[in-house]
Every structure is written in C-alpha cells, then in structure tokens.
Length: 163
Length: 129
Image 1 (tube, rainbow over the protein chains, first blue to last red):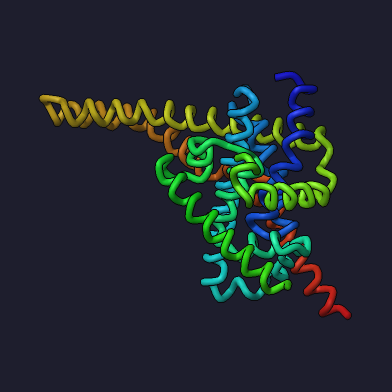
Image 2: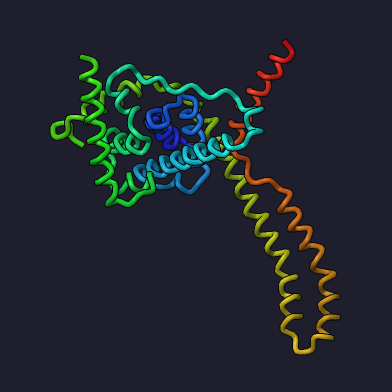
C-alpha cells in the first residue's frame, strides 16, 4: 500500500469511523481519540495490506475493541475509591443534532445503535456486522430485526410527542 | 438496505448526513503515519527481546533437563552445577531485562495520561489560585 493510497483511505474512512463512534458512544472527544488510535494501530499492523473493504472492517473492529477497553477501564476506575482523587472531569456527552431520529437512536441500547448504524449507514452484510461486533452471523438478523422494531417504536413515540 | 422497502432507512440516512457534516478536522495523515511507524518499530523491538529471552533461557532448560534425565545423578549434579554457573546468569539477566522493559508505547494510554495530567494541572492551578 503506497502512502497516497493510505492517505486516501484515511481521508475517506476517518469521517465514517468518527460518525459511527460518536453516534454509538455519544462522546465527541472519545470518538476522536478512538478514531485516531484505530488508524495508528491499523497502519502499524498487517491489516494495512488487506483489500479496502476488509481493511475497513478491520479498522472498525480495532475501534470496537478500544471502545470495549474504555468501558471496562471506566468501570474499574469507578470501583477504585482512589481513582476519584485524580479523575479528570467526565467528558460531556455528544449533543445529538436536535432531531427526533437522533433522539430515538440515542434512546436505544448501545448494541442496537451499532447494529442499525452498520446496517443502514455503512450498508454492511450480516457477516461483516457479526465480525465487527463479535456475535454470530445468524444472531445478527434477529438482533437487527429487534433493534429496528425498537427504533421504529421510539421514532413513532417521539413523532407523536412532537405533534 | 433500501429505503423503498424500509421506512427507517431514509431517517437514518438523513441523520448520517447531518453527523458527517459535523466531523471535526482529523489529525494530519503525516502525524498518524509517524505514530504508526514508531509503534511498528517498538513492536518489532519487543518481539526481538522476547526471542532473546527465550534463547537465553534455553541453555538453562537443557542443562536442567539433562540433569533430571541423567542415569548417574551424582556425576550429573556436578556437571549440571558447572554448566549452570555459565547459563544461569545470562538467563536471569535476560528475564530481568524483559521484565524491566515496558510494553510497546501506546498512544491510547498516552492520550489518557495526558487527559489525566490535564485534570491534575487543573487541580493544582486551582490550589495555587
């Protein structure tokens, strides 16, 4: 992979990864940090030589692992009383762009948000989603169906509330 | 997913467009490239160190195995003692070196540390004030 290819991939994929992260973690700063770190890890690894579609999935998988690490670390830090002494202020949650769609998506569980984003925005197949989220391919169909149903209910609820 | 068949597809697509419009400027590619190269070099150095440690431990393992399997334990113990004086010191040194060397630098941790440090500085500045 040449430098210009890598740069093109970075320019094309960074916004998509950031959008995915900011919508699923709901933290702007965290999304930026994880997106940057994911690219550093990708370019330092053998994943960089993969074809573009697989490379993108590999990148999202790295980001997903980093999100999981962060959640686990935060849970550990919360359990340690000493952590509260030097703990920096909690990052402000990402303000969703004020639409009922954003509110409905934010009201969903984390896994549902990820499933819907990867299926509808990234337009990934069930197999690709399963690889990134670490669930069975057969489960993705069921989980996605439930997520879609919940999202639709929330969407209708927020629309009714708006009227 | 096709919006013709799925009513929520259009809704999510519009949300995606508005989110993508709010993407902050990413770090220059050169910065990412340099960080990745540094990480790659550190990972390679770490791998070499692990190999060296294993290579240094091998002679000690061979001497101990030979001693354990020897049919004449008395003579073998004397020989093993002599060989161990030669092999044990490099083995211990290699293990100590491996234990002392930190794992490859992690920019993720660095970012977290920087954030924590910012929190500390804020705390200290407040105290100074």
